[in-house]
Length: 139
Image (cartoon, rainbow, N blue to C red; front, top):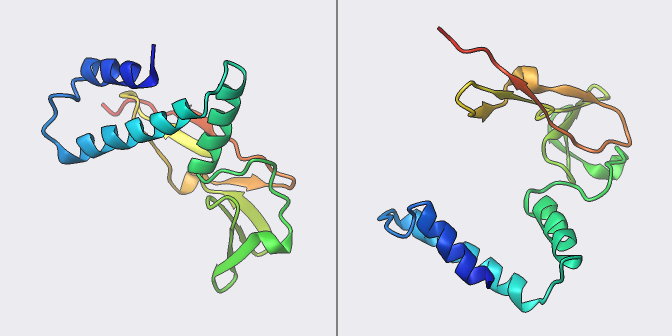
């Protein structure tokens, strides 16, 4: 089964082939282009997951190896506030580093968000991780 055929079946199952939304059509075209390149590379069952894992991290602007916290990893974004250039959700103020996406809040309907309480302190070397916490239903 080809990637293209599989994608078409899944798009159909999701109801996207009948979608009138131009953005959704563009997304499907983009995905098909990515799958075409991936298919042409001829990955095996061993290399495909490896390449996909690296691609997912890089496409999500996540680091491949732990952050070091060294001076060359920071960019000053406002006076006294630094952002890590390898991982945009890691910041440093007054010498303390923190990850603004350390805690992801999940609502009962499955939707997720971050807020000021999502910050977690960071010590180096640091591999970004996310902890999901459920929020109670609002009645």
